[in-house]
Image 1 (cartoon, rainbow, N blue to C red):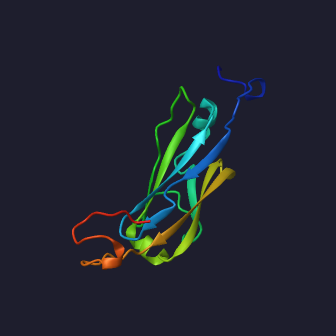
Image 2: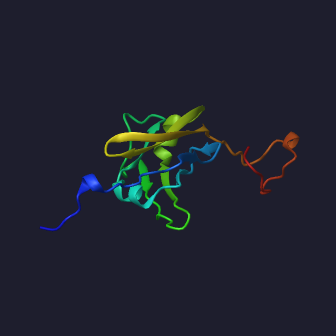
Length: 151
């Protein structure tokens, strides 16, 4: 019979790291998108990664989120064979942000292979609940209908 003798083959699994990023400030009225960048992921490592290889923890998540739910949307990015990278996205719904409003939240992206946590990175953001008044005060220097930036 033919086949590959696993003992005589060496498979190189490597990656250099995980980087979580996203907005520093998020409004509870707009869903927030965080990203998890996997860097220098070997082709053999990518093959070993199954769906749900990237999971998120933190905020008010009980346990972790590795699949799309009614409150969180996870999207696995395409693997870039030239750069050996993959960028996954994690969208946090307005319902979750409303619960978290008024404070700093820390979310952690975790790369999992064969049920083992391989690497992780955290991202902090502050969730705010902006109030926009129809008639801004004279001291704001803004006139009704004028655009402005939330900070």
